[in-house]
Image (cartoon, rainbow, N blue to C red; front, side, top):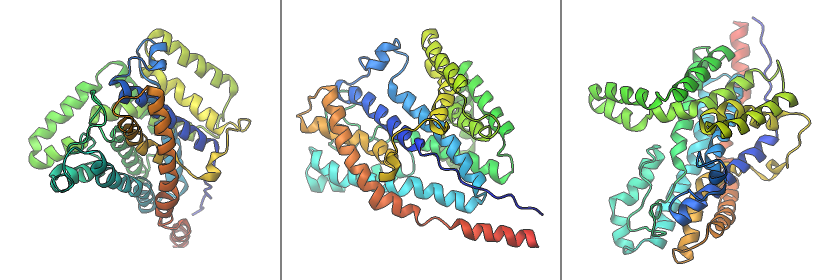
Amino acid sequence: TGIRSRFLTRYSNFDFLRLAAAVAVIFSHAFLIAEGDQSREYFNVLNGQQGVLGLLGVFVFFAISGFLIAQSYETAPSPWRFTAARLLRIFPGLAVCLVLCSFVLGPFVTSLGIAEYLQHPRTWLFVIRNLALLSDDESLPGVVFVDNASGTVVTGTLWTLRYEVYCYLMVLVLGVARLLTLRVAAAIFVVAMLANLLNIDDAIGARYGAALDHLGIAGAALKEWFDASGFLWLMPAFAAGMCLYFLRDRAGPRNALALAALAGVVATVVLGKMLLLFPLFGSYLTLHLATAPGIRLPAIGRYGDFSYGLYIYGWPAEALTVWLRGGHAAWYEVCAGGLVIGLALSFLSWHLIEKRALRLKPRRAAFDASLLVQAAD
């Protein structure tokens, strides 16, 4: 049996694009935290209230993730190594963030006494439920940063993490079943896009929930954790990234297609379909910027991978900023404070937590050796 060598191609532009997506999320959230809504967010105003820049940042994250996660599994097709790598990438940094929010930020801001705060069950459930990716638990006892609709939210970005994990599980299942191919990825993309375009993603989610109602306690637990409609909404961007990974050697990044994709993004804004069609055009544009040989974005990866840390710390950093200003601050003050504090925390998170956790991944060489043994047998 022949063995095909696998090489993990490193595209340095991904580091900059992921950090830019995290900054876009912080920019949009600054309006939500400072003003209680995002109707005056500049990009939202520009596109006629179709969506904020931060949502496009989320799509960019998922498109990049689809590309890199497909590459990760195909490069080292070991379910154990893949699972360990994904868990180590998400949960150590998240666990520390939640503990800091609950037991450092919370006691600092709460209107309750420290003893009452620490004895309150919600203080502990906040960590447990968010670590389980049940991101509907966003507040802490007595913690109010600002007097508006978003004033009690401590972690407003964690809602996407469960969908990211869904995508990891999907890749794992496809990989084990030997279905991690361009055809399958393209089929997933088409089905998810049609579900969103036909506005049946919510109906599918409702039917899924109704089916689980018949499964008792297990069904109720799965229903709480797995959100089918949200998964379908973000799936096209991830699946597009997977498709473009499998197509990377066939076509490669092309400037003409990138210009067409840019024109497509502009057209979707004009047609009022920006969020629905961004995964189609925006994903190609994103991955063209990431992989085109002639494009050199700032090589920030030399200092570390701060995008995940900035994403999870950005909201609490912005919320703390407005609280320190007495509960009243302009959006740009909230944004600036969130970036400064968030970048500092993401720097520490990467170098003290995330990078060290990733060193615990099973060594690829061990799996390569096992493949050689199997081939010899």
